[in-house]
Amino acid sequence: MASDQEQIRALAYEYTFRLDGGDFAGVAELLGEGELRMSAAGMDEQAMRGREEIERFYADQVVTYEGDPRTRHLISNHVVHVEGESAHANCYFTVLMKPPGQPIQTVVCGRYLDRFERRAGAWRFTEKTIQVDYLTKIEEHFVIDQDHAA
Image (cartoon, rainbow, N blue to C red; front, side, top):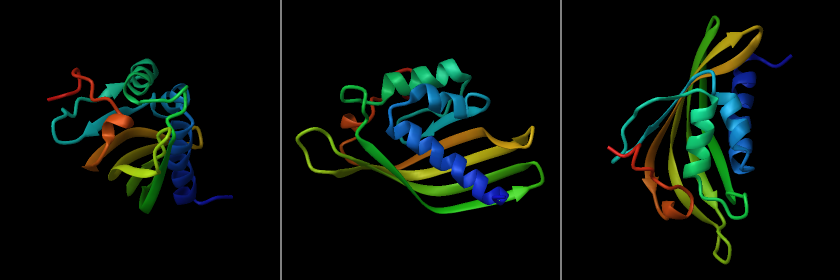
């Protein structure tokens, strides 16, 4: 049986697999019981809640090419702290992208600051904050919605 830390890391990795696959409903399924926050210069940190709002956010903001974001989210330095039935984790993320007709490139780097609860024996996200630190050609990956701009 996997340790709590391994289960939490697997949940965080599943988020990236679904996002890279353009499965925004699946991302919303993972995050929908909690809150999603974006933290970056020029954006407010208003929390998004619920599956519908979170799915709509990703569907409206992530640029896709015939449904494929053409990205790979890499997680590194993933530290998980478990305290009974709750946990928090943080890690670095790097997003690589291969837009059509262009070389692979790094488009964004930052940190994921996550909170979890164990419910009915399984770990669930209660909060995901995406802290954006560095951007390059973000417009090819993500649209900043005026509703979320500060």
